[in-house]
Image (cartoon, rainbow, N blue to C red):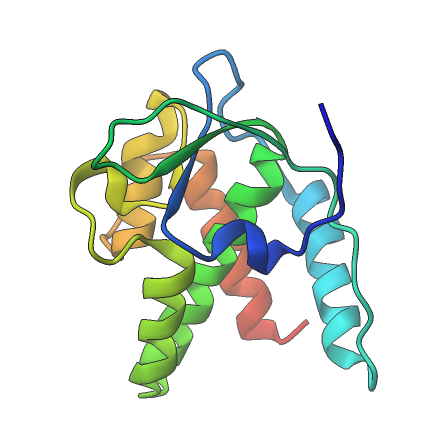
Length: 166
């Protein structure tokens, strides 16, 4: 295995999908982890000359995919961070839509969150474990929630942080 430094943008842009293997735990981050990530983001946003930021390791491995499908990668480490970042990007997209910045919202959606020209499960850039999959897809698709789930808690927690501005 070869380790290298990669920018988040390089990980999530392009037509690809990160699949969280069934043996991985479901999404479990709580306020403690969300606060650390949020403080890092706020600090970076407030810097006059932002620097690169280490968000933690993301370990993935290419998988065999069908010829017409998207390139798939098993997400071995970093699924909690990457899932949370996708949730934040969804909220940024939603905020851009609210502010009638449709072009920016579409850019976030179509380059960072989904594989725009793919259908079915290949549409989503991240494919969580079975337990979290439907809820995650509902968040990405902007559907309302009625269930208790840690992914919804993450989304709602960040909605409140954004509304507070801190």
